[in-house]
Length: 269
Image 1 (cartoon, rainbow, N blue to C red):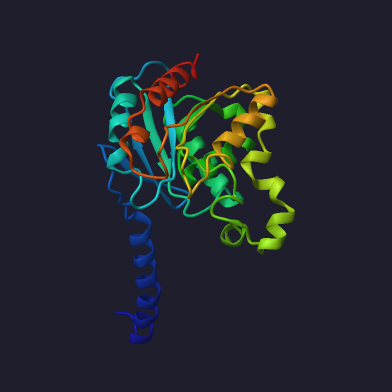
Image 2: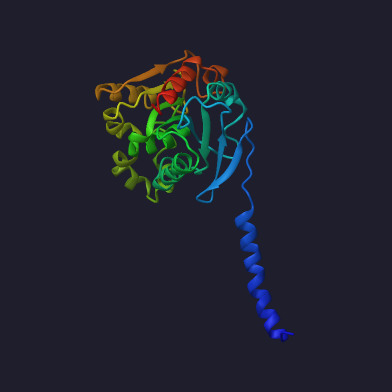
């Protein structure tokens, strides 16, 4: 029988180990608008809604942003159903309020690697960015244009200065507002379109003309003007009298669905 001092020492070793083991095996939990699987990538919660019948091998897919505790939400169900029916899966990862920063981009790359090397999905994905998810997705796309089959945005944030503003975004970049302003061209998607244009990545956005949260002219419209000047292609739908709202036309856009299906299906050819 071990002396009491040894038992105490053994207990002090085992208890933290058991706690650590429990933390490691506890699966992440997330409520999804449609059936799917929730898993962990680089210790961050990720999800996959996989199509039952895929249209090709490797399997086409959409990378959705932003993945947050309440997103994707039920409003996305209409378009998700159409993606899945067409054999296109949807995945995402919670990178927090990254505003397109380096750590967030690394997590998207980790999810991309998980999907393409371990789960058999296509080497090119269509990005779907809702609001600030546009900032996250476009920031990753600017660094990885060869991995992107297209980008679709629902009133997407394309300019850090526009939203959330330099003071708020600077925290995510480990800078102050003045430092971020001086280096904005390094990070802001509206200033980092050249690589995507060269790779001929098609863009699409639906964005209301009275959006006061994410103004049209400083975001989607600016991207279209600059992208086309670089030789890129972008379709922009502007619903009249619509702002940054839950209007169902943003989430039940047949044009958006058609864009995603077209580009996701050719991503593996």
